[in-house]
Amino acid sequence: MGGVSKRTTATEPRCEGASVDLSRRLLSQALEQTADIVLITDNKGVIQYVNPAFEQSTGYPSNEVVGARPALLRSGFHDKGFYNQLWSTIASGQVFRGVVVNQRKDGSHYHEEKTITPLFGQSGEITHYVSTGKDVTDRVRVQQQLHELAYFDALTELPNWRHLQQLLAQAVQLAKRRNNTLAVLFLDLNQFKRVNDALGHAAGDRLLREVGRRLSATLREEDTVGRSGGDEFVVLIHQPKKMEDLAHVAEKLLKQLTRPYVLNGQEHRIGISIGISVYPQDQQTPGDLLKAADMAMYRAKTDGESNYRFFSSDMEAEVVDRIKLEQCLRQGVGRNELTNFYQPQYDLRSGRLTGTEALVRWRHPVHGMISPGRFIPIAEETGDIIAIGNWVLTEACQQIAEWTARGLPIKRMSVNLSPRQLAHPEIVAQVRRLIDEHPILAGNLVLELTESSLMQHPDQAALTLASLKDLGVKLSVDDFGTGYSSLSYLRRFPLDCVKIDRCFVKDMESDKAATALVEGIVRLAHSLNMSVVAEGVENEVQLKMLSQMDCEGAQGYLLGKPMPPEELHSHSMQEAAGSSCTSIGCWGSNQV
Ligand code: C2E
Ligand code: CA
Ligand code: CA
Image 1: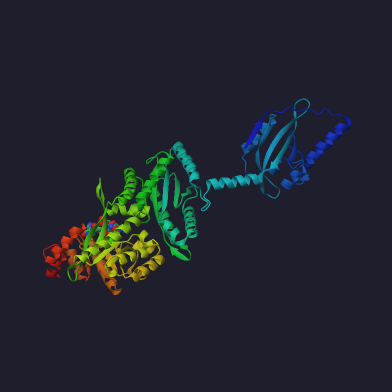
Image 2: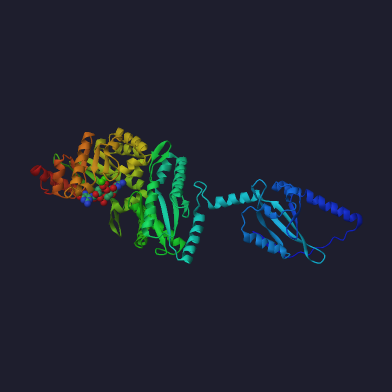
């Protein structure tokens, strides 16, 4: 802030008589009338003179400061070292230049751009110091605002990406110097885009602000939090002692951030994914630490709603794979590399094959068959799911129309609808078009929705489902039991069927609680006029138990794996001929 320049030699004006008087008068008028703040002290620093501009800027009348020291203007903004340097500069005969923050009489601060010049007597000794300055408070304020704009996110008022990078670089340097640890947490809101799309940008902004507020409120004062862009935040935890401490912080953050947010008068929940990297064990440079935390965040995201994950070195390879997969997928869709498999669904009461679920497959020319479990979540995130979902739906409609034309008994076609598809404004029109264009009965088309896609925007989902119902299609809730909703909550949606997730079916043999749960779901679903399909039936014991519970539908490897359409065709022909022994037709009639 301060600066010095070379000693200036005083020159005594060589004026005499009337001209001396004139120049003195002029000088004193200049001092009195100049807009610059002028203060003159003797060589001991005692104020001898202040001009009206000084009085105006500081609020001190001349008589209150003459005889005092300039220290009365000290604001506390500068440290002792600053003043020591200032005084040693001028005491050595040099000029001081710099911006000094001073305090007015009323306690407020002002920035003065100051020059202090020593005055020399005949024999070269310092006799006075003359300080001239300008009040640059407004200019400094504008500069500060510009700085804030450049370094702080206007929405959340947290450090922005640029600033975060600097803070991280400093933190890494400090940790290196002091042999400390440092943790970088990368936070991402799951499906924030949907909040923005559904509730509008103003609500999205409010949500981000509230996330920022909760983050700051949950963290310690000494931790750093910033918004790195969009719906991403970065937290720096200085000197974490143990991994458990970080896990504890991550859990605390998840807990606070997943509490409901009131937006447009309604409660909404969002999911959060957190990735954590630690200096020095994971990575050593700021860029690598961020990248590692980002990778861990991705892992957290693919592992489900609201998770945190620590970075591990195997993630690197996975991220590279994922990026490649993303690019390939887009090309694959264009190159017709997708294909639908169909898994038979049986009616446990009649023992007949009555329906099928379309399950998409990706035949990659090099990597072979890629399972939807790998590429659907990516497509959901990138938005490619819209194109993929449309393709699957159209293909499934064509298939069921073809089977019907060929006299196959498979009537019902279930198709998975992803959360993004459900939220898409064109979904109802698209389903309507498909029904119109294919010779199929709307009631034979079943759309499978997951609980989480219903729960994200319940009101919007309810409206869309009502319109889909009006078309005559059936609606089913998939993977039931894995979300957190209760069946009675799901009553607000016009659902026809519940698919019990295979994890409960799997546990039924060994776990009485799972059996009771499945039985409870079946009973409750029936009382709500919904039918039930059990997924993942792999053995006869499960099949029998389900049958005894009066569960009407079953699907699983025991009854048939997902298979290409022609295979399902022959499977159903064998069925009809009574020669398929894995089928429920054979099993059902003998044992139920
Ligand atoms: P999902 O809808 O729950 O589909 C059932 C999954 O369970 C299928 O896996 C199926 O192969 C598998 N499965 C069926 N019976 C059994 C069994 O007895 N035991 C075991 N262990 N597994 C069984 P798949 O085909 O890999 O699909 C995985 C998930 O990918 C599906 O789960 C669904 O969520 C998603 N998916 C598949 N196709 C589509 C699609 O066209 N659109 C959308 N949005 N998602 C799809
Ligand atoms: Ca399904
Ligand atoms: Ca399922």
